[in-house]
Length: 258
Image 1 (spheres, rainbow, N blue to C red):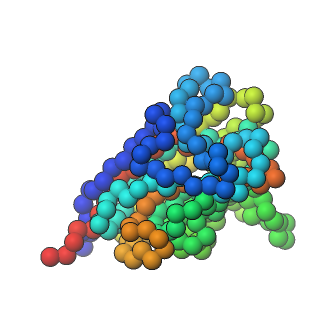
Image 2 (cartoon, one colour):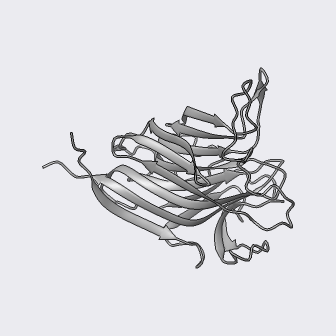
Image 3 (spheres, rainbow, N blue to C red):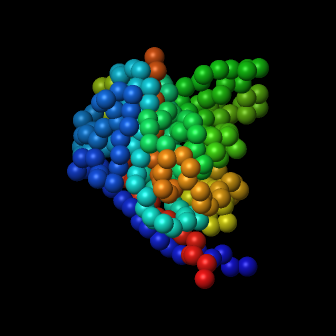
């Protein structure tokens, strides 16, 4: 049976011209999130980036960048999002999230919105607890309506904890050096097929593939008129950069009946 869908909206930004007009920023700290230059000595990227948090700045309790609807009045049945991420140069906390769905306009944390009708991908840097010898992070979690559907612990291969590296990396921090070291970005690709299958690649390594999770979102009781994309991050006592660059999103829509 053929799926009924059509290519709909596209959105892209390199954040080089300041805060894009399609984005709204919310946060506990009035300085975050922000769009400003990468001045770390990374000579390949001296222009603007979306900074959810910065290394050296603790207690950014919530920081969100929310994109206006790409397809107003339409039902999104699938999408592909590509962006580059830099995490690190601090002492390792707390993480960031990418999300799509119905949620409130507010500063959200590394876990994404606490209340959401939709998809969240949490890039969790800081281990908040270890149970029976198994840490809960670093990890990449996939959630639907804020409930974890899939958990991928990242680290040295271990039959005890179930951790595994992503390629050769035992962490999702892309730069583990000090604050004086240049930023390092890795590509992230998130794809949702029209039949609900979810896939994710981190630094060109497949982490999830064909995970059945997504459902079109048709009701919006949480404060928005339609489904939107967003990023969020947090630092507590510990801190890291959580930066996003070169965002490209393409959506598929479900045509109206009739």
